[in-house]
Amino acid sequence: MAGLPDAERMLRPREVALLFKVDPKTVTRWAKTGRLTPVVLPSGHRRYRAVDVEALMSSTSRKMRVTTTHICGRCGTHIACDSVEA
Image (cartoon, rainbow, N blue to C red; front, side, top):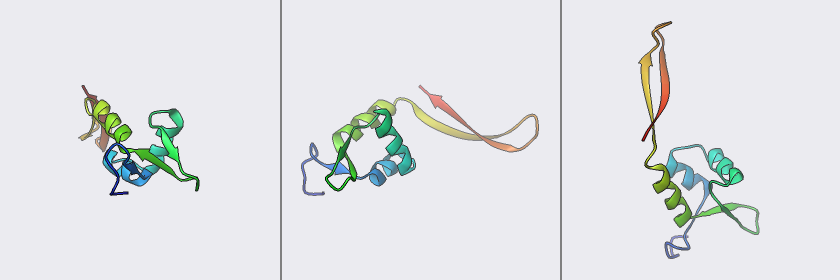
């Protein structure tokens, strides 16, 4: 779908997932919860408007997820913690 103008460009769930660095199933969950609105093709496959994806990216870029690894003070193992930066 490379020949379409940006306003009409459609992305596959896999492409959206790569942009957000998430699993494609997460993109499906976002569609079910209304975070992204899919366009359902006659074949039943879902596509997402590039402008909608870009809008979601800009709204979530202010709150970036940062994963850090540190040593647990109680047991001494390495653990990963997710924190949200504003």
